[in-house]
Length: 271
Length: 222
Image 1: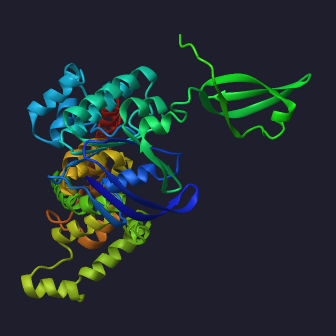
Image 2: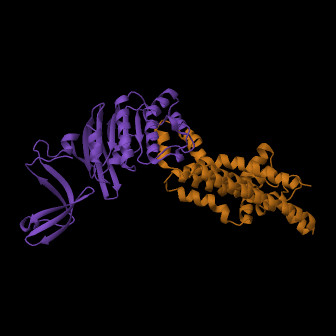
Image 3: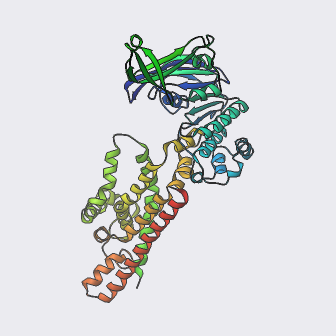
């Protein structure tokens, strides 16, 4: 079990704020850490990795000294070493290195230098490299943010595979709900340095659980008056949708704000 | 006949070696720190670039002469004079060429990916291990530049050497000083030969540095 009770003053992009986190994480949990940029996610992760000074206490209860693995958002491989050498520099355990490269289908790239690899391959090598420490706690700082959809899926599978095989307690920063849903069992939402939501991933993500309705968050882009109705244009993720509203309903809406679209009592079809 | 060249190269080799040992920790510290004394240290190390060699030479002469506490100490304890001999040339060259070793190394270290260094520390590697196995191999162009330019710059120094070392044949008479003396006694043939050698060598040295750096960039994308 990890016990975190910390305080740190931050000088972030949004001015002064303080990071205050009081939290317990069970062994073997896969925790997703989410929240707007500048909310302190990366800092929290870096604190756990011992890269930042803090006030307060962290009890990690690990059995060996280098039991915390930290994977950066951007590639941090050693360019002067081959893939295999990158792994062996962390720990001289060739058997483990070959095992990890086999698990992630990277074995044929073992003699290659990092600058000859694609972005996705580099991140997979980074993941293998951090596992060379045999971490009990695995900290992943948006490891997939720079990758395309196909590569993401591949790496998500690798992360889950390694999480299970090495029985790590994993904390991953992510913004992608589908990724959080696929990987994590618990989701923490950070805002201005405080945890504002903490719960079972499925409960946090499926806000409407049990009542059989749709609910989407989106940004209101435009309100168009057409005869007696108003058409609202809303961006939901990558999709733009039109919704017909009455003038009465549209009265309190403002373009540029976030809105929730929901509907009750109908059975959707999924194609 | 080529003894001045021999002295120049001996001086440059020793200077490079000493400066590398001094500059490695200094440039690493400067590249990693955000301390308030950093600008002061940077300004101090850069001084030899802007100071006239005669000013530098004058202060070194004053500091090392037998009338100074340091000079007197060495004279009394070891019976070594610190001026007008080869030792004084080495000391003077180390001051004179310091920025040419520190600056390339420092900017090389600063260009390194911070995440990469953290990855090494997080795996439990010490600073020393990180410097030798991760940092230095990834700044090879900066390293080569620092060593070669320091060497070449030491071979090319004139004013400081003349002031601190004089021109004692076989001891402190380096190639650049030899050329100056040849011109003074109107030995233009000798001056031509020496100058041509200096010119040719300097060009070859610079050419090989730039060629190496271009090749390295293609290979490792650094």
